Image 1: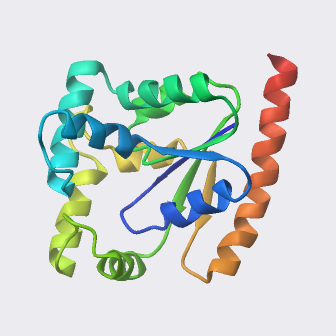
Image 2 (image 1 turned 180 degrees about the horizontal axis):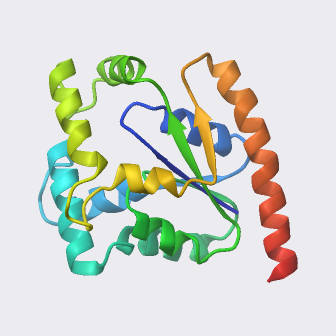
Length: 192
C-alpha cells in the first residue's frame, strides 16, 4: 500500500509519516526527490529553492515527475510506503496508478502550524507570521499548473486528518486510517 500525505506547512505531516513508519511502512518524500535534484545542481535546499526547483522540474518533466521517481523506488524496494509532500494534482494522478494508494490531507489551524514551524527552526522557513502567510499563499493556488497546488491537491484527498490536538488524538485518528488503508490494499490485491 501507499499512503500519500499532503497538507500545508507545519500541519504535522512528519508526525503522520512517523506513525505509519511505526506500523512497518517505508518512508519517502517527494521533497527528498527534489532535494536530490537541487543538490545535483549545486543548490541548497532552502524553501525558496524547493519551490522554484519544483516548478522547474515539473515544467521540464511533467507535473507527476517527482511521484514517478518515488514510484520507481517503491517498485524496486517493495513493501508498504508512506509518501510525504504530495503537492500537485498531477503527482496524485501518477500515484493513483497504484490501486492501493490513499491520499491524506493533514490539516491544522494556521496559528498551530506557525508555532510548529517556528519550533522546528528549519532553514528557509519563515521568520515571522507575515512571511509565513506570504509563503503559504504562494503555495496554495498559483496560476502555473506545474507549481505547488496545495488547494487543488487537498481536494483530491481520500481522507482528511485534523491535527490540532494531542499526539494521542492524532494516533487515534490514524489508527482508523491504517485500517482503511489496509482494506484498500487488500481490495487492490484481490482486484489486481
